Image 1: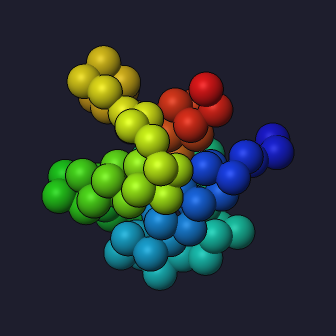
Image 2: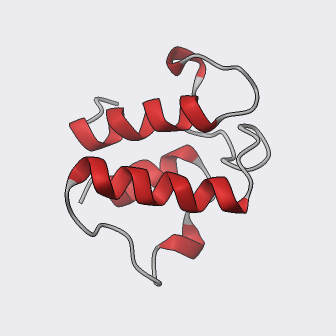
Image 3: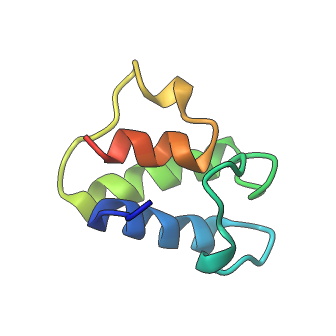
Length: 80
């Protein structure tokens, strides 16, 4: 899967917030943001905010945030 600019930026933000010392090449779409990457609820909010600042737009809303559990879920929101 070819990632767009927002998805690539999100992957780098995930690497920066990840507590598992993973590189961007090790981030897999099926990984759980919480369990596999060790990103807790406060870090998740930071992830959302940093992705939006990077994109320069409001991307997330109350309908899609609760459904973001995996890296692919995040990428799906950013593909639109």
